[in-house]
Image 1: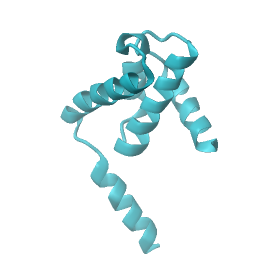
Image 2: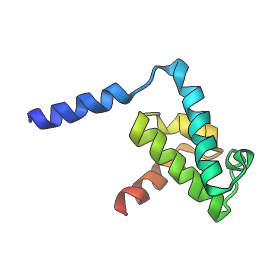
Image 3: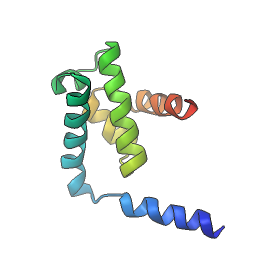
Length: 95
């Protein structure tokens, strides 16, 4: 039980105040787009090209799992609906 609480405390310290989220989201999108060779504007257009979808999944995973950014907020920034982000995260968890 103590181990679970300790892990929860560590996750909470990674959560950001709302005012810092916007900059973090842009930074993560920029970083992953550069790594994958995708234009940032492509990510927000909602297209289904495999390389763009791959970037969205990586962005969603990092923002949600590492920083606790809500799925709805991520979805707004990457041009898809919240359920698409939820599905992508579920698929990543299975891998």
